[in-house]
Image 1 (cartoon, rainbow, N blue to C red):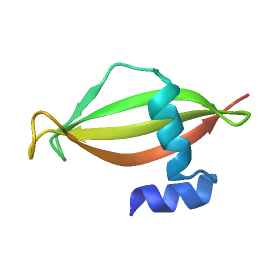
Image 2: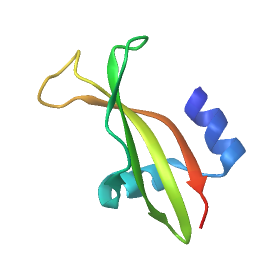
Image 3: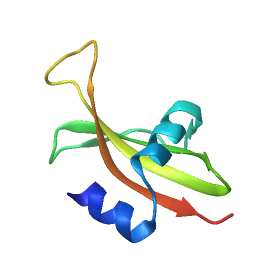
Length: 79
């Protein structure tokens, strides 16, 4: 729900997040989120002409070899 709301407010899509996950770089150290018991990663890169940062969570509770990727939010940074 949070991701969907923010993507509409900030005008980004799941495709933007996927591009940054594939081609971007870590923009901060991972942080453990006690509330959801997962790790949150910040990954930044270019989407079209925008600088974009995605925040995703990785949840290893179901499968240690293939964690679940949880899209949290995204934000366009200054150009």
